[in-house]
Length: 246
Image 1 (spheres, helix red, strand yellow):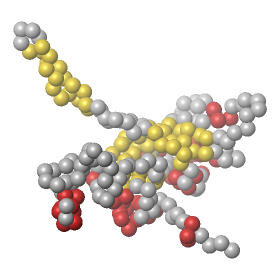
Image 2 (tube, rainbow, N blue to C red; image 1 turned 90 degrees about the vertical axis):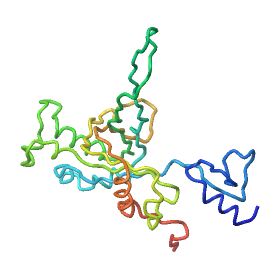
Image 3 (cartoon, rainbow, N blue to C red; image 1 turned 45 degrees about the horizontal axis):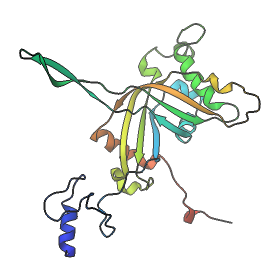
Image 4 (cartoon, rainbow, N blue to C red; image 1 turned 180 degrees about the horizontal axis):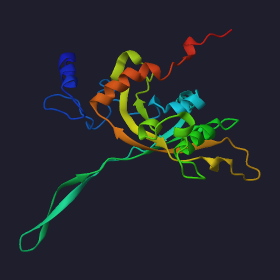
């Protein structure tokens, strides 16, 4: 096989489907290291970026974004979206024929953070949740305390969740390094995390806070473009060959 014909085969290989001719396939009976058509997807590179946080939350906790964005231990809530079927009975035998029915989106997510001395993670989420509903009176307290109208617009936020390829700080590549991007709207936490303060004798472990959120997911090409523009704001990594050693 000539180099030109080999390259032609690679160029005609799109989205994991082989075309006719001499295109490479994933199932050729053995690994061909001289031609790499696809890399396996690798997990473990995920970031969040707050687009909007209620003003009365950040006024009390100015470091809210930093403590949550840079202290993300896990993110959960993305699930498969399954389309339901609509069955119709036909004929004398009442045989069922399946048609496309409804489809429902996933709702809500959760994030886990490492807790620090002084319990800042617990305190900032306590402030947000109890401001929307006080546990003792079930009354929203932030409108009176901060001179705001009670409205979802004043107590919810927006959050971008992005997963990338391993070259996570390759900002010049733009959207090419994005594996997925989800914009969560109408975000609000739902838990005051007192459970992290429980005690078991002989246990001296680090503490993590898991916080569930309500939210409406938005995804697609427009969200991906928005995520690509946010990439330079996520992290600034200092690599080993960039570290100054005195």
